[in-house]
Image (cartoon, rainbow, N blue to C red; front, top):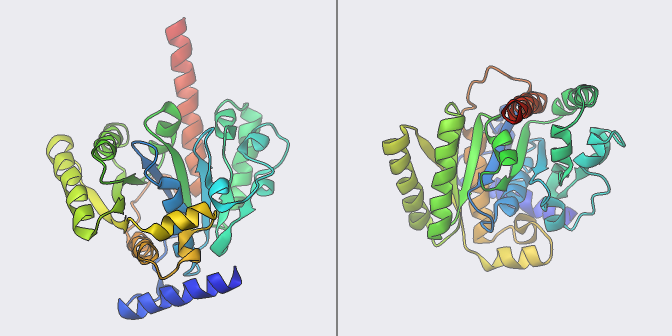
Length: 308
């Protein structure tokens, strides 16, 4: 793994020299909270999250992934890591948030989620206060907090997408994936109109193919939703990605000179250079969960009133 990390750093440095981009001058905005989502499953969202996070970390950025794919969290599976504890154990008070952190490849850190996030939404006031205190400590050790949400538009996914200011929507060239991606953009426009929406096309044929897809979504969103979306980048279809997934390795480390690896470095570079949207809540991860808890409490109260 050390040789892989050194190889990756060389790839990033070479790319920086060619594109006037040096990792020690990376314009990082501390405690940026970014949700990564998709309209449907099978678009490679979690794999993209892992490799993009490693690319960010290769420049010295402190990256924390929160696996918020409730019940189906697979970040640890993709990396071949066995997580002893998840958010579920934090929700039940068995361990602290610090205890469940897993160190991943390339210097990233991971908070395994699983069904634990659902438990957190039902946690008592005392349990939530304890969690918030733990989050306050954790977030000051992090520059980028990447939330890997579930696919689709379930209430659990919406809880995260309506609580952050930066959202990456991942799609593929498949027509159903593009349609579902637009549905996700539409939902965000209605539920979280101030959010910055960025598009990534995964498994694209080439740059033009990806650009055309992103442009079409952008044009329709502008016309019917009166919002702007930005094209963050694309990752081409690459057999090296399949080989890496099969061996439970990030393709950026296993095959750092592959086309997919070069593309994900460009995506990370552009993300790092994006202007962070101004937000009234700058508490990072703690602020995120505070908003999610507030939403959960509101939904619970609304449900009780409807039953009554």
